[in-house]
Image 1 (cartoon, helix red, strand yellow):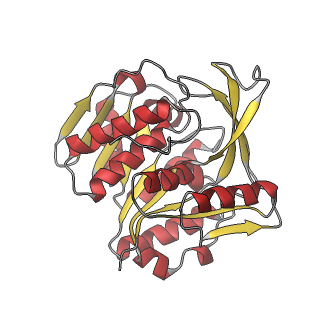
Image 2: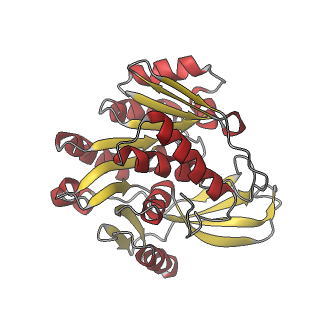
Image 3: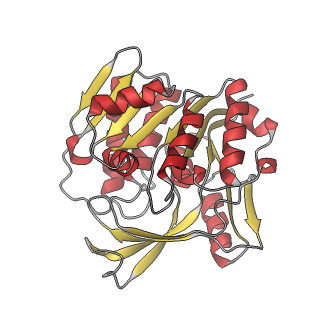
Length: 303
């Protein structure tokens, strides 16, 4: 019985987003806290789209951790696999408010202490999609847990997904990151990444075709490349190429989490057996609503 549409595995943390627009972390003087972490955003977004989601994550058994649990519970995310630990405080990230890729400064503590006991066989069997991120894979024990359970999810017939949100601030050892990404991509996940992610990963600008060929060679059948104001390109290993211009947005308030909103919309469409063009169109509409809202997606989504 599949009761969970998207099983999100990875970081939960608090984003402290700057109150002043288009400043760096250095020059921002005031911040407001929001529930954050890419898999966490996808889990919360999924519920707002009418899906069932569960989050496997770890936070501190502290005031911020209780804030996290309360926000997730009120968002109707399944938190049965959320672990609150005494040894480390809840992770936080300072983020600048920006209309482009935001500046950020991470303080990681509890988020990567995810162990295999948090992901039961029953939880996997109850799910349709197993989703994670490059951020989540950057440290052990979360890395080993995520990879081992991803293999189990593949064996059980789940679709896999990953946001390759690579940053050297999170994962300084790029060679190690590429090695781990290769291991996950052997399982043929749906892949989402941005031009910024690619530039950080490859240390230089790469052509779209290089990016698609590279990740297809590692085992991914579908690669979705988001390009900010330049739109989106999706390439399927079968040869289907889809390019979409960016939507016109007159009032961008906050770019943090826009990629997560896009990918939730894409996964929603895939779960509903929509074709590639519909999936990208819908994902862009969801991302647009996020860009016009500070923090997460607004509670009232326009379909």
